[in-house]
Length: 358
Image (cartoon, rainbow, N blue to C red; front, side, top):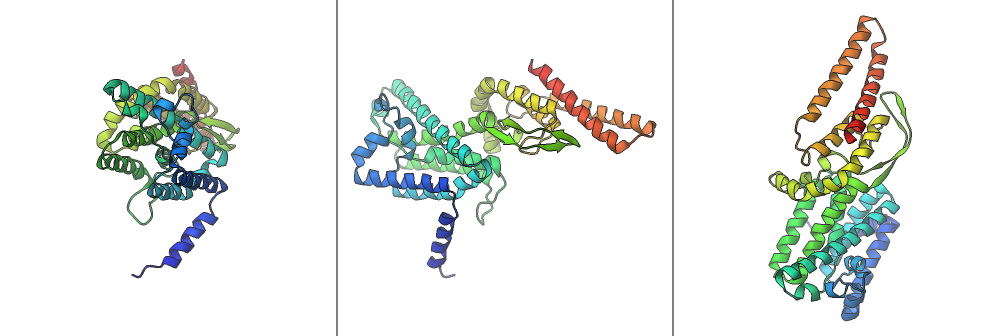
């Protein structure tokens, strides 16, 4: 089949013109930093790039290093990601939350990489870990892939058999292979750390700290007041679940447990209160499912159940059957009784969540 350059140009023009203002601004910043680096390579590196031994007093480089583009191929990939994946996520969250996410991932990536490069210098006594200069948008791209995995894990990637949930592991492996094939120099190691810390910091924020406005709705016929929900307690969004199954046990033990030790108390309290009020989460979970997810997070290693949630489920089902049997025996309104029973279960489990949290 003959190529159609005109059609491709028209498709690109459509993507750009229909993109959000935030995506256009972010892409423009990346292009401008590349032009700056091409015209004034030394000045751009001093002003924007991350060089560990010069971070103090140039603390702004912890953030600006992610916007420092010096490779045209990387620039094209990153701008494409912003115009496609970036605005896909932004339309779910809103512009303000999207900008907050990008800035938080930027700062986390720069700070964690700076600390890690110093640790590598101390361990190896190789001074080039301190003097190397690097930067790029790779960390934010990894963070956006985590966000895409959260909002639409089964979304197809073009006409391929791949899904959104497959893209993060593929990107991490690709960046690792590229760093090794490029010689694994000090700046390659720094850029790969950008990818690793970008994915991890994005997951930590989305899992435990992102605040989502939730409009009013109903649960089993009961009114639900509007609220703000914190984090994403779904089992399918555990950090281990982001990776292929053979890696999940190792990833869960190494990466997830320390995070849960620091953050699960906050998440447990928030989810317990949600279950007590009988509200849905933004992802369609009922009060019972919220509590089960909370119990799984507190009492399991990244979603590997120890059996307690099954006991709670059996108690809830037994309570529901008992209420319905009582109504049938007295000739009452079974459908209305089921509504009341399920609402009562939500309140009961919510109370149990609060007791366990204490």
